[in-house]
Amino acid sequence: MTGSHSDQQTRQLQVAVNELTVLNDIATTISSMQPVEEIIDQIIMKCIKHLAVEEGTISLLEKESPDQAFMTMIRRQDTTADRLPIKLDTKLTGWMLRNRSILLSNDIHDDDRFQFMKDDESEFQSILSVPLIVKNDLIGYLAVFNKKNTDGFTDEDKRLLSIIGSQSAQVIENARLYEEEKALLSLQEEMKMAKNIQLNLLPKSNPELKGYEVAALNIPAKSVGGDYYDFILLDSGKTGFCVGDITGKGMPAAMLMANLQATLRSQCTIFEDPGTCLKGTNKQLHRSTEATKFATLFYGVLDQENGTLEYANGGHDAPLLYRKNDPVKELNATGLLLGVMPESDYTIGRIELEPGDLLALYTDGITEAMDKAGNEYGFDRLKTQLSGMAHESAETIKEGLLKDLKSHTGEAAQSDDITLMLIKRTT
Image (cartoon, rainbow, N blue to C red; front, side, top):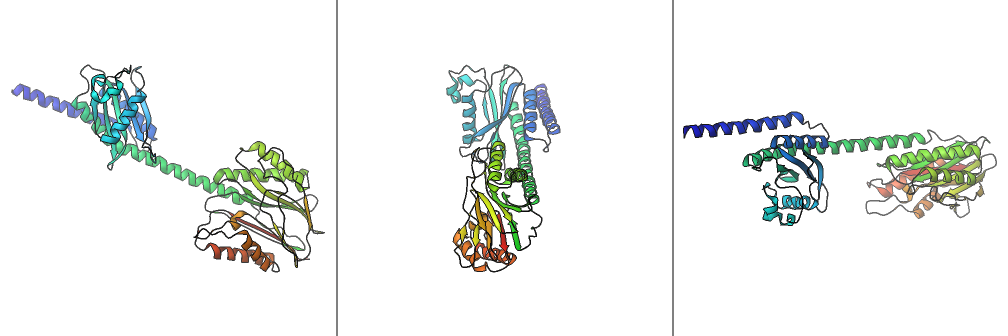
């Protein structure tokens, strides 16, 4: 009896030492600063080694998944055993969601819980699976298959894998949270970079044109959009100017804006008339962007000596011309949005700016600005507000419109970029 008791104590001591060795081995090879895939891979390989099995896998519950689907992160084999059958994979998922407990079977094909495997030719004979639980939330499961010795999985294996699972769950979750945080920081950095690109492309100051007042503003929304405005001094001495709106947000919109600016400016050095400039810009933009990316753009060329303005409008919100004692005139689209079709013609519109005339260009960030109740500022209010201030200086009109816009939106968050350009002939 004494010898038997001593042998039992010796075996218990060996089991305890083995468990500590395995856990220490895993602990020293896992760092929470590593990518989650590397951490999972190391855990599985250690399980395969210390539990002497043919294959191991870890599957994690996909966050925000409506059907609580598991995603197999890493599966490793010690032999050329077949991959885990889809049916078994699916049943394991269901088992863990229902029971959240340890699953052990040393004869899958004669186990009533695996009736669905009766006709399956899979070489899997035994399975040991434990849930991965963090703060009472199931995040996935760890499973090993086919114990190499003929005795199958033991209670000691069950205890050891359970300990590994409980220790690994928090490490895996920490790594996953760390990667989500890194992704968020990366996105924030991208947004910051996009905003800098956007701001650097906009004019640092307004041009000084004899006989004219020019005022402009651009207020980016919290999420970077793609409003664009520019002034271009042409070789002829005339002044080109434009206001546009790029589809999308973030870095893609900022890069498309940069593309649009470079393309339009290159066309302006070759062609002076705005219709040809927009035609060439559209063609290049269509070639270099995805089918879902496009821009609206109004481009005008002002001869400040005689007040002649030639323009082309690629689907942009119609600029408004205010003239004393005349109805407001809208400079409507003369062609399609840029980037939609490879070939598009843009007819030229012509007007004469007279002393006292006001030309207002804007983006839909103004007309679609909403208050907390979801009511838009609207096109009619914009026209009325501009009409009431048309006799003022361009700078005064800009500040007055901005004040009225803010009185409408109140504390509601800005959802889109706001861009306004005012050109007023004074003499």
